[in-house]
Length: 333
Image: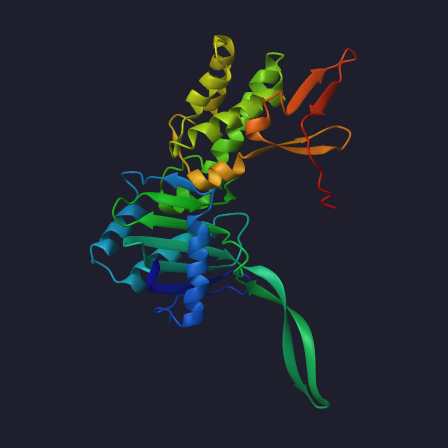
């Protein structure tokens, strides 16, 4: 259950040069609460959200701690945070207008601070004009369109009030010729660990790359990695990518060493916390696409089962796939 205790909106309009800092909290009418709650739910479920911890000398961490202790008001704290974000954005090459929403909420009795950065999008709206000849309806561009309920927030930060651990989705900006993640690196001053989505993507790509570099079957290696995840997620919500590599490349120390080296280069030095249900859904099938345009979605459980699927290396160097024990075929159009 999500309860919104406080909410405020600040407008960073770099197009017009007018920045408006609210001096009052938002009026949480029913439709506004629904809008915010839906986006909170979507953000909490994001597989691409990265976890993080504040650095000990983070100025932002000190200000958040002061607010949580009651040493500053919600409005003053939110204004200070928004101004810090505005000043940071002004030093980027991609200065873009945005609406900043700060929320103080409870999610299942756990207090959290949530920052939504809604980058302004161009949309089309109607405009009713009164002319000397009567009413004239027009279509105009509108430059401050927020994401609707079917869309996702461009960037966000969720901070657990008790532990101060973070979950965030951030975009890269160019500052002084360098590409940086603005929210974690400049505004919050926190670490940013790989996301659940990063972990799955890296596992599949790294196992395939290692197999290919050693002249092994890359498709089979990637499928074996998915199979490991499917089995392991039944009993744990942690994914240890190093342990997965040991399982995929059993009795192949050289391949394991290469795999571990690649993982370290990508920053995977500890297990990643996963959403069991969502992860199992993602690895339930292994999708293949041939150079002839044929696409297959094979259940992960069947991939290594020759009773249902069998791969053959032909004499001419091509590959054949045999599907067995098919009782019926449904045309999906």
